[in-house]
Image (cartoon, rainbow, N blue to C red):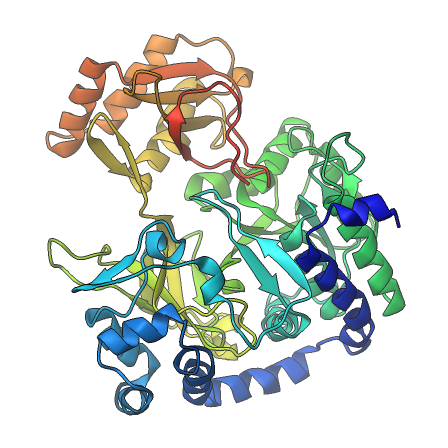
Length: 544
């Protein structure tokens, strides 16, 4: 191993890598199976309240620097008070009461963009203060940064082992214990964790596809080095991991060919990928005449809508969604097997507790349907207590009858969207309004698919707002003015606020159409829109 390469890595990454190599053989020696996972899950659900209180005591009340301790003190809630509250109301009931007393963090507070102001108190936050002091780490997983500065999240093998319980049960419920799986993404922390998760349930990936060329000149050596370390450590544990193969997001047919080969041999291929890349794969396969009937996908990282799901079904594939975040330690919910919406998931409430803001006051800090997440497990990388990640959803209990409900996960989430706003010219829309136009209205009128149109909000050099509507050149010749009119007409349907917004944007000349491929984040996502600060620029945005 090149000493110069190692010298370029932060000390924390070197320490984590050393621990990972030492810990992998024992971690892989006893893969998780559904029988053992079922017993562990039941134990977790029975101890749920006790585990929550133990975590609060050790990681909050015994930590003077914890921002949550300061919030709880401001609310007059000592540990004994919390214990009584949980005993009387349950975890979710207690969290709901705490929220009304100011014990929560908005996404801006959580990420350190602004202090948490409660009454006369102002608590300055730094994401590192939210690290679980007892969790330890074997690797660092960095958040995408799609909505702000990225956060480094320390991940331990014990935490990954906790997630294996849920993944093993999910695979069995979905009938996937004999699938041949592959992962497709950037080989950073999240991809490495996914490789370990598949290996830890006894199904190491058959293929590993990388969206970047690890031999590319100028690429930070951590990517190639982390892959080599992981493969070597797994080999010490008796598990062979394939080397990543470079398959760029704009040319995915190599993955479709692998899927077709597995299907011809009588097997079931399963791909874990971001939603937009999975959609692009299925669309390319359909256009190339490749049959993927029987292929399975697990999609994550972005909303899965009816339009995107229809593209997958046209290729003959089936997909379900995985809702999670690095900050929350990965899994939050896994796709219902009998969903009422394409993104419906069962909440892993053995790992997390989720409530909604549920307040109608005009000056409420969060939308009524905003999701607030709290940690339950002692292995959680970051401690969360009523933390908003900027998402909203429908949260409900229903009897779906699918295998995940029978396991014990009875709470559902669906129509999960960001409530962060698109604002230009003093007019604001939520992403749900924009998604409909980008995925349905424009493709129906001009052609293309649900990942061929994207909005980018910028600020010009003069400080004026500018919305760029990116239109993929593959759609063919269209008149920019006609596309812009179609977008504004669709946004301005009705006579109320949307109509006013349309008129303001038209008169201000806010919208500009640009013929180029939608921007991808460094991890390969195609978000419905980007919001850029600072001057307008032609270069791709630097989101992860």
